[in-house]
Figure 1: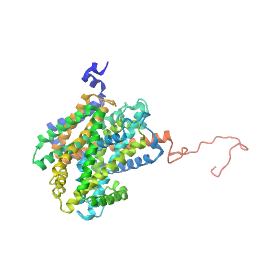
Figure 2: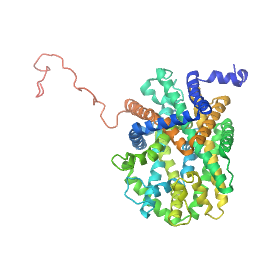
Figure 3: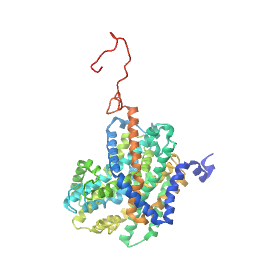
Figure 4: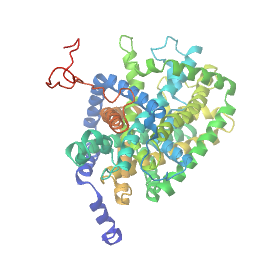
Length: 545
Protein backbone atom coordinates (compact mmCIF):
# COMPACT_ATOMS: atom_id res chain seq x y z
CA UNK A 1 0.00 0.00 0.00
CA UNK A 2 1.40 3.41 -0.99
CA UNK A 3 1.77 6.34 1.38
CA UNK A 4 -1.06 8.12 -0.47
CA UNK A 5 -3.41 5.20 0.14
CA UNK A 6 -2.49 5.00 3.82
CA UNK A 7 -3.06 8.69 4.42
CA UNK A 8 -0.89 11.07 6.44
CA UNK A 9 -1.87 9.64 9.84
CA UNK A 10 -1.46 6.05 8.67
CA UNK A 11 2.01 6.78 7.30
CA UNK A 12 2.97 8.50 10.55
CA UNK A 13 1.78 5.61 12.72
CA UNK A 14 3.53 3.04 10.56
CA UNK A 15 6.89 4.80 10.36
CA UNK A 16 7.51 5.64 14.04
CA UNK A 17 9.65 3.58 16.35
CA UNK A 18 7.08 3.23 19.16
CA UNK A 19 9.59 2.89 22.01
CA UNK A 20 11.87 5.80 21.05
CA UNK A 21 8.96 8.04 20.04
CA UNK A 22 6.91 7.27 23.15
CA UNK A 23 9.69 7.73 25.69
CA UNK A 24 11.14 10.79 23.92
CA UNK A 25 7.72 12.39 23.66
CA UNK A 26 6.72 11.50 27.22
CA UNK A 27 9.91 12.99 28.65
CA UNK A 28 9.63 16.29 26.82
CA UNK A 29 5.85 16.69 26.83
CA UNK A 30 5.88 15.66 30.51
CA UNK A 31 8.24 18.53 31.33
CA UNK A 32 6.03 20.95 29.38
CA UNK A 33 2.91 19.72 31.17
CA UNK A 34 4.54 19.88 34.59
CA UNK A 35 5.56 23.49 33.92
CA UNK A 36 1.93 24.54 33.56
CA UNK A 37 0.95 22.60 36.72
CA UNK A 38 3.89 23.41 39.00
CA UNK A 39 6.39 25.93 37.61
CA UNK A 40 8.55 26.01 40.76
CA UNK A 41 9.03 22.21 40.65
CA UNK A 42 10.44 22.39 37.13
CA UNK A 43 12.65 25.35 38.08
CA UNK A 44 14.05 23.65 41.21
CA UNK A 45 14.64 20.35 39.42
CA UNK A 46 16.60 22.04 36.64
CA UNK A 47 18.70 23.93 39.20
CA UNK A 48 19.49 20.78 41.23
CA UNK A 49 20.45 18.68 38.21
CA UNK A 50 22.61 21.49 36.88
CA UNK A 51 24.52 21.69 40.17
CA UNK A 52 25.12 17.93 40.24
CA UNK A 53 26.38 17.85 36.64
CA UNK A 54 28.80 20.72 37.20
CA UNK A 55 30.15 19.32 40.47
CA UNK A 56 30.86 15.77 39.31
CA UNK A 57 31.23 15.77 35.52
CA UNK A 58 32.97 19.05 34.62
CA UNK A 59 36.45 17.48 34.39
CA UNK A 60 35.12 14.61 32.26
CA UNK A 61 33.61 16.96 29.69
CA UNK A 62 36.88 18.87 29.34
CA UNK A 63 38.98 15.71 28.95
CA UNK A 64 36.59 14.00 26.51
CA UNK A 65 36.22 16.99 24.20
CA UNK A 66 40.00 17.48 24.12
CA UNK A 67 40.50 13.80 23.20
CA UNK A 68 37.95 14.09 20.38
CA UNK A 69 39.71 17.16 18.93
CA UNK A 70 43.04 15.33 18.90
CA UNK A 71 41.48 12.27 17.23
CA UNK A 72 39.83 14.30 14.46
CA UNK A 73 43.06 16.15 13.69
CA UNK A 74 44.71 12.73 13.51
CA UNK A 75 42.03 11.48 11.06
CA UNK A 76 42.71 14.39 8.71
CA UNK A 77 46.36 13.42 8.25
CA UNK A 78 46.21 9.65 8.78
CA UNK A 79 45.61 6.87 6.19
CA UNK A 80 42.23 6.22 7.81
CA UNK A 81 41.05 9.53 6.32
CA UNK A 82 40.78 8.00 2.85
CA UNK A 83 37.85 5.77 3.88
CA UNK A 84 34.55 6.77 2.27
CA UNK A 85 30.90 7.01 3.27
CA UNK A 86 29.58 4.48 0.77
CA UNK A 87 30.40 4.19 -2.93
CA UNK A 88 28.04 6.83 -4.35
CA UNK A 89 29.26 10.27 -5.48
CA UNK A 90 28.54 13.19 -3.10
CA UNK A 91 24.93 14.40 -3.26
CA UNK A 92 25.76 18.11 -2.88
CA UNK A 93 28.49 20.46 -4.05
CA UNK A 94 31.19 21.16 -1.49
CA UNK A 95 30.02 24.75 -0.91
CA UNK A 96 26.42 23.64 -0.31
CA UNK A 97 27.68 20.82 1.92
CA UNK A 98 29.76 23.29 3.92
CA UNK A 99 26.93 25.86 4.16
CA UNK A 100 24.44 23.25 5.41
CA UNK A 101 26.91 21.77 7.88
CA UNK A 102 27.75 25.22 9.23
CA UNK A 103 24.18 26.56 9.35
CA UNK A 104 22.77 23.40 10.89
CA UNK A 105 25.58 22.99 13.38
CA UNK A 106 25.98 26.01 15.59
CA UNK A 107 25.76 29.17 13.50
CA UNK A 108 22.82 30.52 15.52
CA UNK A 109 25.05 30.51 18.61
CA UNK A 110 27.88 32.13 16.67
CA UNK A 111 25.63 35.02 15.69
CA UNK A 112 24.24 35.41 19.22
CA UNK A 113 27.60 35.45 21.02
CA UNK A 114 29.68 37.10 18.25
CA UNK A 115 29.62 40.70 19.52
CA UNK A 116 29.06 39.77 23.17
CA UNK A 117 31.31 37.07 24.53
CA UNK A 118 34.66 38.85 24.32
CA UNK A 119 33.25 41.68 26.44
CA UNK A 120 32.69 39.32 29.38
CA UNK A 121 36.27 38.02 29.15
CA UNK A 122 37.55 41.58 28.81
CA UNK A 123 35.75 42.46 32.05
CA UNK A 124 36.44 39.14 33.80
CA UNK A 125 39.44 37.37 32.19
CA UNK A 126 40.00 33.67 32.70
CA UNK A 127 41.98 33.01 35.91
CA UNK A 128 44.34 30.97 33.71
CA UNK A 129 45.80 34.28 32.47
CA UNK A 130 47.35 36.89 34.73
CA UNK A 131 45.79 40.01 33.20
CA UNK A 132 43.78 42.80 34.78
CA UNK A 133 40.11 43.46 34.17
CA UNK A 134 39.45 45.84 31.24
CA UNK A 135 43.18 46.31 30.65
CA UNK A 136 44.87 46.51 27.27
CA UNK A 137 46.25 42.99 27.74
CA UNK A 138 42.74 41.72 28.48
CA UNK A 139 41.61 42.69 24.97
CA UNK A 140 43.78 40.09 23.28
CA UNK A 141 43.07 37.43 25.91
CA UNK A 142 39.33 38.06 25.51
CA UNK A 143 39.43 37.35 21.77
CA UNK A 144 41.76 34.37 22.30
CA UNK A 145 39.35 32.79 24.79
CA UNK A 146 36.40 33.43 22.49
CA UNK A 147 38.13 31.79 19.52
CA UNK A 148 39.00 28.79 21.67
CA UNK A 149 35.37 28.34 22.70
CA UNK A 150 33.98 28.63 19.17
CA UNK A 151 36.58 27.04 16.91
CA UNK A 152 37.77 23.42 17.07
CA UNK A 153 36.28 21.89 20.26
CA UNK A 154 32.56 22.67 19.82
CA UNK A 155 32.68 21.63 16.19
CA UNK A 156 34.54 18.44 17.04
CA UNK A 157 31.70 16.81 18.97
CA UNK A 158 29.30 17.33 16.05
CA UNK A 159 31.80 15.93 13.61
CA UNK A 160 32.74 12.80 15.55
CA UNK A 161 29.07 11.80 15.73
CA UNK A 162 28.57 12.54 12.05
CA UNK A 163 31.52 10.36 11.07
CA UNK A 164 30.54 7.52 13.39
CA UNK A 165 26.90 7.45 12.25
CA UNK A 166 27.56 7.99 8.54
CA UNK A 167 30.44 5.57 8.13
CA UNK A 168 28.56 2.57 9.51
CA UNK A 169 25.19 3.50 7.99
CA UNK A 170 26.56 3.88 4.45
CA UNK A 171 29.09 1.04 4.46
CA UNK A 172 27.18 -1.80 6.09
CA UNK A 173 23.83 -3.40 5.36
CA UNK A 174 21.04 -3.22 7.91
CA UNK A 175 22.69 -0.35 9.81
CA UNK A 176 20.06 2.45 9.99
CA UNK A 177 20.75 6.16 9.86
CA UNK A 178 20.23 6.87 13.56
CA UNK A 179 22.30 7.94 16.55
CA UNK A 180 22.75 4.48 18.09
CA UNK A 181 24.44 3.34 14.86
CA UNK A 182 27.47 5.36 15.95
CA UNK A 183 28.16 2.58 18.46
CA UNK A 184 27.94 -0.27 15.93
CA UNK A 185 31.44 -1.66 16.78
CA UNK A 186 30.55 -1.67 20.48
CA UNK A 187 26.94 -2.88 20.37
CA UNK A 188 27.25 -5.11 17.30
CA UNK A 189 25.05 -4.87 14.17
CA UNK A 190 22.73 -7.53 15.49
CA UNK A 191 21.96 -5.46 18.62
CA UNK A 192 21.03 -2.12 17.01
CA UNK A 193 17.38 -2.80 17.83
CA UNK A 194 18.20 -3.94 21.36
CA UNK A 195 17.61 -2.20 24.70
CA UNK A 196 20.98 -0.42 24.82
CA UNK A 197 20.46 1.09 21.36
CA UNK A 198 16.95 2.23 22.30
CA UNK A 199 18.25 3.94 25.43
CA UNK A 200 20.86 5.82 23.38
CA UNK A 201 18.28 6.95 20.82
CA UNK A 202 15.88 8.10 23.58
CA UNK A 203 18.74 9.99 25.26
CA UNK A 204 19.58 11.52 21.88
CA UNK A 205 16.01 12.80 21.45
CA UNK A 206 16.02 14.33 24.92
CA UNK A 207 19.48 15.88 24.46
CA UNK A 208 18.49 17.36 21.10
CA UNK A 209 15.31 18.90 22.51
CA UNK A 210 17.31 20.52 25.33
CA UNK A 211 20.15 21.74 23.13
CA UNK A 212 18.05 23.14 20.31
CA UNK A 213 15.49 24.66 22.68
CA UNK A 214 18.44 26.44 24.34
CA UNK A 215 19.46 27.92 21.00
CA UNK A 216 15.89 28.85 20.10
CA UNK A 217 15.61 30.55 23.48
CA UNK A 218 18.79 32.54 22.89
CA UNK A 219 17.63 33.65 19.46
CA UNK A 220 14.12 34.46 20.65
CA UNK A 221 15.46 36.54 23.53
CA UNK A 222 17.79 38.37 21.14
CA UNK A 223 14.90 39.17 18.83
CA UNK A 224 12.67 40.38 21.68
CA UNK A 225 15.51 42.46 23.18
CA UNK A 226 16.22 44.04 19.81
CA UNK A 227 12.63 45.18 19.48
CA UNK A 228 12.69 46.59 23.01
CA UNK A 229 16.10 48.29 22.68
CA UNK A 230 15.58 49.91 19.30
CA UNK A 231 11.86 50.63 19.22
CA UNK A 232 10.78 50.35 22.88
CA UNK A 233 8.46 47.41 22.19
CA UNK A 234 8.21 45.31 25.38
CA UNK A 235 6.42 42.09 24.50
CA UNK A 236 6.59 40.34 27.91
CA UNK A 237 6.00 36.62 28.35
CA UNK A 238 3.14 36.60 25.84
CA UNK A 239 5.45 38.21 23.31
CA UNK A 240 8.12 35.58 23.92
CA UNK A 241 5.61 32.85 23.13
CA UNK A 242 4.45 34.80 20.06
CA UNK A 243 8.01 35.22 18.73
CA UNK A 244 8.91 31.59 19.35
CA UNK A 245 5.66 30.45 17.74
CA UNK A 246 6.36 32.57 14.65
CA UNK A 247 9.87 31.18 14.36
CA UNK A 248 8.51 27.67 14.81
CA UNK A 249 6.08 28.20 11.93
CA UNK A 250 8.88 29.53 9.73
CA UNK A 251 11.24 26.61 10.30
CA UNK A 252 8.34 24.15 10.00
CA UNK A 253 7.57 25.57 6.55
CA UNK A 254 11.22 25.25 5.55
CA UNK A 255 11.30 21.73 6.98
CA UNK A 256 8.25 20.58 5.00
CA UNK A 257 9.92 21.82 1.80
CA UNK A 258 12.72 19.31 2.45
CA UNK A 259 16.52 19.37 2.54
CA UNK A 260 17.08 20.46 -1.06
CA UNK A 261 14.41 23.16 -1.41
CA UNK A 262 14.39 24.27 2.22
CA UNK A 263 17.60 23.79 4.19
CA UNK A 264 20.07 23.94 1.28
CA UNK A 265 18.74 27.15 -0.26
CA UNK A 266 18.30 28.96 3.05
CA UNK A 267 21.76 27.84 4.20
CA UNK A 268 23.36 29.26 1.06
CA UNK A 269 21.51 32.56 1.59
CA UNK A 270 22.58 32.64 5.25
CA UNK A 271 26.24 32.35 4.36
CA UNK A 272 25.99 35.22 1.87
CA UNK A 273 24.36 37.51 4.45
CA UNK A 274 26.82 36.28 7.12
CA UNK A 275 29.83 37.22 4.98
CA UNK A 276 28.29 40.57 3.99
CA UNK A 277 27.67 41.59 7.62
CA UNK A 278 31.14 40.36 8.60
CA UNK A 279 32.86 42.41 5.88
CA UNK A 280 30.80 45.51 6.65
CA UNK A 281 31.71 45.31 10.35
CA UNK A 282 35.40 44.84 9.53
CA UNK A 283 35.46 47.79 7.10
CA UNK A 284 33.52 50.20 9.34
CA UNK A 285 35.28 49.03 12.50
CA UNK A 286 38.93 49.53 13.52
CA UNK A 287 40.23 47.38 10.63
CA UNK A 288 44.01 47.55 11.23
CA UNK A 289 43.57 47.04 14.95
CA UNK A 290 41.36 44.00 14.28
CA UNK A 291 44.01 42.44 12.04
CA UNK A 292 46.70 42.87 14.70
CA UNK A 293 44.38 41.77 17.52
CA UNK A 294 43.25 38.71 15.59
CA UNK A 295 46.78 37.69 14.69
CA UNK A 296 47.86 37.87 18.32
CA UNK A 297 44.73 36.05 19.56
CA UNK A 298 45.13 33.19 17.06
CA UNK A 299 48.77 32.78 18.10
CA UNK A 300 47.79 32.72 21.76
CA UNK A 301 45.05 30.16 21.14
CA UNK A 302 47.49 27.82 19.38
CA UNK A 303 50.13 28.26 22.08
CA UNK A 304 47.77 27.80 25.03
CA UNK A 305 45.35 25.30 23.47
CA UNK A 306 46.17 22.35 25.74
CA UNK A 307 46.14 24.44 28.92
CA UNK A 308 42.84 26.08 27.98
CA UNK A 309 41.31 22.71 27.05
CA UNK A 310 42.06 21.10 30.40
CA UNK A 311 41.72 24.11 32.74
CA UNK A 312 39.40 23.04 35.58
CA UNK A 313 40.30 25.93 37.90
CA UNK A 314 41.51 23.59 40.64
CA UNK A 315 43.42 25.53 43.32
CA UNK A 316 42.71 28.89 41.68
CA UNK A 317 40.35 31.28 43.45
CA UNK A 318 37.18 31.47 41.36
CA UNK A 319 38.76 29.26 38.72
CA UNK A 320 36.32 26.34 38.83
CA UNK A 321 33.30 28.64 38.85
CA UNK A 322 34.68 30.49 35.82
CA UNK A 323 35.42 27.26 33.94
CA UNK A 324 31.94 25.89 34.72
CA UNK A 325 30.20 29.11 33.68
CA UNK A 326 31.93 29.28 30.31
CA UNK A 327 33.95 26.34 28.99
CA UNK A 328 31.99 23.51 30.61
CA UNK A 329 28.70 25.14 29.62
CA UNK A 330 29.80 25.48 26.00
CA UNK A 331 30.99 21.89 25.79
CA UNK A 332 27.73 20.65 27.34
CA UNK A 333 25.71 22.80 24.94
CA UNK A 334 27.65 21.42 21.99
CA UNK A 335 27.27 17.86 23.28
CA UNK A 336 23.50 18.33 23.58
CA UNK A 337 23.53 19.28 19.89
CA UNK A 338 25.84 16.42 18.88
CA UNK A 339 23.11 13.77 18.32
CA UNK A 340 21.10 15.85 15.87
CA UNK A 341 24.07 17.68 14.32
CA UNK A 342 25.90 14.39 13.89
CA UNK A 343 22.86 12.73 12.36
CA UNK A 344 22.34 15.65 9.99
CA UNK A 345 26.03 15.69 9.03
CA UNK A 346 25.78 11.96 8.30
CA UNK A 347 22.61 12.57 6.25
CA UNK A 348 24.37 15.04 3.89
CA UNK A 349 27.82 13.32 3.81
CA UNK A 350 27.09 10.25 1.68
CA UNK A 351 29.89 9.71 -0.83
CA UNK A 352 32.46 11.83 0.98
CA UNK A 353 35.63 10.63 2.66
CA UNK A 354 36.29 10.55 6.39
CA UNK A 355 39.09 13.09 5.84
CA UNK A 356 36.79 15.45 3.93
CA UNK A 357 34.08 15.36 6.60
CA UNK A 358 36.61 15.78 9.44
CA UNK A 359 38.33 18.67 7.63
CA UNK A 360 35.06 20.45 6.83
CA UNK A 361 33.68 19.81 10.31
CA UNK A 362 36.52 21.33 12.32
CA UNK A 363 38.89 23.23 10.01
CA UNK A 364 36.71 24.82 7.30
CA UNK A 365 34.02 25.83 9.79
CA UNK A 366 36.64 27.25 12.16
CA UNK A 367 38.01 29.29 9.27
CA UNK A 368 34.56 30.87 8.88
CA UNK A 369 33.98 31.35 12.60
CA UNK A 370 37.30 32.94 13.60
CA UNK A 371 36.97 36.10 11.42
CA UNK A 372 33.42 36.65 12.72
CA UNK A 373 34.48 36.72 16.36
CA UNK A 374 37.58 38.79 15.65
CA UNK A 375 35.56 41.40 13.72
CA UNK A 376 32.44 41.64 15.89
CA UNK A 377 33.96 40.75 19.27
CA UNK A 378 37.09 42.79 18.61
CA UNK A 379 35.05 45.81 17.52
CA UNK A 380 32.87 45.65 20.65
CA UNK A 381 35.90 45.39 22.95
CA UNK A 382 37.66 48.22 21.11
CA UNK A 383 34.56 50.42 21.39
CA UNK A 384 34.30 49.78 25.13
CA UNK A 385 38.02 50.30 25.74
CA UNK A 386 38.05 53.59 23.81
CA UNK A 387 34.68 54.94 24.95
CA UNK A 388 33.04 54.75 21.51
CA UNK A 389 30.11 52.75 22.89
CA UNK A 390 29.07 51.80 26.42
CA UNK A 391 28.54 48.11 27.18
CA UNK A 392 28.99 48.46 30.95
CA UNK A 393 25.38 47.51 31.68
CA UNK A 394 25.78 44.32 29.64
CA UNK A 395 29.01 43.38 31.46
CA UNK A 396 27.32 44.10 34.80
CA UNK A 397 24.36 41.87 33.77
CA UNK A 398 21.97 44.81 34.05
CA UNK A 399 21.16 44.35 30.35
CA UNK A 400 20.99 40.95 28.70
CA UNK A 401 23.84 39.67 26.55
CA UNK A 402 21.44 39.71 23.62
CA UNK A 403 21.47 43.54 23.49
CA UNK A 404 25.20 43.85 22.73
CA UNK A 405 24.88 43.60 18.97
CA UNK A 406 22.26 46.33 18.88
CA UNK A 407 24.38 48.69 21.00
CA UNK A 408 27.40 48.08 18.76
CA UNK A 409 25.57 48.51 15.45
CA UNK A 410 23.82 51.62 16.78
CA UNK A 411 27.26 53.30 16.84
CA UNK A 412 27.72 52.59 13.10
CA UNK A 413 26.54 54.78 10.24
CA UNK A 414 23.12 53.47 9.13
CA UNK A 415 22.97 51.60 12.41
CA UNK A 416 19.28 50.74 12.04
CA UNK A 417 19.98 48.98 8.75
CA UNK A 418 22.69 46.91 10.42
CA UNK A 419 20.41 46.02 13.33
CA UNK A 420 17.65 44.86 11.00
CA UNK A 421 20.16 42.78 8.99
CA UNK A 422 21.52 41.33 12.24
CA UNK A 423 18.06 40.34 13.48
CA UNK A 424 17.25 38.83 10.09
CA UNK A 425 20.48 36.81 10.12
CA UNK A 426 19.77 35.58 13.64
CA UNK A 427 16.31 34.45 12.57
CA UNK A 428 17.31 32.71 9.33
CA UNK A 429 20.23 30.92 10.97
CA UNK A 430 17.90 29.69 13.65
CA UNK A 431 15.42 28.45 11.03
CA UNK A 432 18.08 26.28 9.39
CA UNK A 433 19.26 24.99 12.76
CA UNK A 434 15.76 24.19 14.01
CA UNK A 435 14.80 22.79 10.61
CA UNK A 436 17.68 20.32 10.53
CA UNK A 437 17.29 19.42 14.21
CA UNK A 438 13.59 18.65 13.82
CA UNK A 439 14.41 16.52 10.79
CA UNK A 440 17.01 14.69 12.88
CA UNK A 441 14.62 14.07 15.81
CA UNK A 442 12.02 12.80 13.35
CA UNK A 443 14.63 10.43 11.90
CA UNK A 444 15.56 9.25 15.42
CA UNK A 445 11.95 8.41 16.21
CA UNK A 446 11.34 6.52 12.96
CA UNK A 447 14.25 4.13 13.27
CA UNK A 448 16.43 6.08 10.83
CA UNK A 449 14.01 6.91 7.99
CA UNK A 450 15.66 9.56 5.79
CA UNK A 451 12.35 11.24 4.86
CA UNK A 452 9.99 11.24 7.88
CA UNK A 453 6.37 12.26 7.45
CA UNK A 454 5.29 15.88 7.82
CA UNK A 455 3.13 15.03 10.85
CA UNK A 456 6.19 13.67 12.65
CA UNK A 457 8.25 16.75 11.81
CA UNK A 458 5.51 19.20 12.80
CA UNK A 459 4.96 17.43 16.14
CA UNK A 460 8.61 17.77 17.11
CA UNK A 461 8.74 21.34 15.82
CA UNK A 462 5.92 22.30 18.19
CA UNK A 463 7.63 20.49 21.08
CA UNK A 464 10.88 22.38 20.42
CA UNK A 465 9.11 25.73 20.31
CA UNK A 466 7.16 25.10 23.53
CA UNK A 467 10.28 23.95 25.39
CA UNK A 468 12.21 27.05 24.34
CA UNK A 469 9.39 29.38 25.41
CA UNK A 470 9.18 27.71 28.82
CA UNK A 471 12.92 28.01 29.41
CA UNK A 472 12.88 31.69 28.45
CA UNK A 473 10.00 32.41 30.83
CA UNK A 474 11.57 30.35 33.64
CA UNK A 475 14.82 32.25 33.83
CA UNK A 476 16.11 33.51 30.51
CA UNK A 477 19.75 32.78 29.75
CA UNK A 478 20.43 31.06 33.11
CA UNK A 479 17.65 28.52 32.59
CA UNK A 480 18.76 27.96 29.00
CA UNK A 481 22.34 27.27 30.11
CA UNK A 482 21.17 24.86 32.80
CA UNK A 483 19.04 22.93 30.31
CA UNK A 484 21.99 22.57 27.94
CA UNK A 485 24.27 21.24 30.69
CA UNK A 486 21.69 18.74 31.96
CA UNK A 487 20.94 17.28 28.54
CA UNK A 488 24.44 17.51 27.09
CA UNK A 489 26.70 16.21 29.85
CA UNK A 490 25.54 12.56 29.69
CA UNK A 491 26.05 12.52 25.92
CA UNK A 492 29.75 13.22 26.39
CA UNK A 493 30.19 9.55 27.20
CA UNK A 494 28.27 8.48 24.10
CA UNK A 495 30.61 10.60 21.95
CA UNK A 496 33.63 9.16 23.72
CA UNK A 497 32.48 5.57 23.21
CA UNK A 498 31.71 6.37 19.55
CA UNK A 499 35.30 7.59 19.14
CA UNK A 500 36.68 4.43 20.76
CA UNK A 501 34.44 2.35 18.48
CA UNK A 502 35.85 4.07 15.39
CA UNK A 503 39.41 3.46 16.59
CA UNK A 504 38.61 -0.20 17.27
CA UNK A 505 36.93 -0.70 13.88
CA UNK A 506 39.51 1.17 11.80
CA UNK A 507 42.34 -0.69 13.55
CA UNK A 508 40.79 -4.10 12.89
CA UNK A 509 39.84 -3.48 9.25
CA UNK A 510 42.51 -1.06 8.00
CA UNK A 511 45.43 -2.02 10.20
CA UNK A 512 46.96 -0.43 13.25
CA UNK A 513 48.84 2.81 12.76
CA UNK A 514 50.83 2.93 16.00
CA UNK A 515 51.51 -0.73 16.88
CA UNK A 516 52.44 -3.61 14.61
CA UNK A 517 49.78 -6.25 14.03
CA UNK A 518 51.66 -8.87 16.07
CA UNK A 519 51.64 -6.71 19.20
CA UNK A 520 49.36 -8.08 21.92
CA UNK A 521 47.93 -5.36 24.17
CA UNK A 522 47.12 -7.59 27.16
CA UNK A 523 48.72 -10.88 28.21
CA UNK A 524 51.68 -12.76 26.80
CA UNK A 525 52.57 -12.75 23.11
CA UNK A 526 54.52 -16.02 23.35
CA UNK A 527 52.83 -19.12 22.02
CA UNK A 528 52.96 -22.20 24.31
CA UNK A 529 55.82 -24.51 23.47
CA UNK A 530 55.16 -28.14 22.49
CA UNK A 531 57.46 -30.99 23.39
CA UNK A 532 59.73 -32.27 20.61
CA UNK A 533 62.82 -34.42 20.55
CA UNK A 534 66.14 -32.77 21.14
CA UNK A 535 68.75 -32.63 18.48
CA UNK A 536 68.45 -31.28 14.96
CA UNK A 537 65.00 -29.81 14.47
CA UNK A 538 64.17 -30.23 18.17
CA UNK A 539 63.72 -27.67 20.95
CA UNK A 540 66.47 -25.11 21.28
CA UNK A 541 67.50 -23.89 24.68
CA UNK A 542 67.68 -20.17 25.18
CA UNK A 543 68.72 -17.91 27.99
CA UNK A 544 65.01 -17.57 28.88
CA UNK A 545 64.55 -21.34 29.49
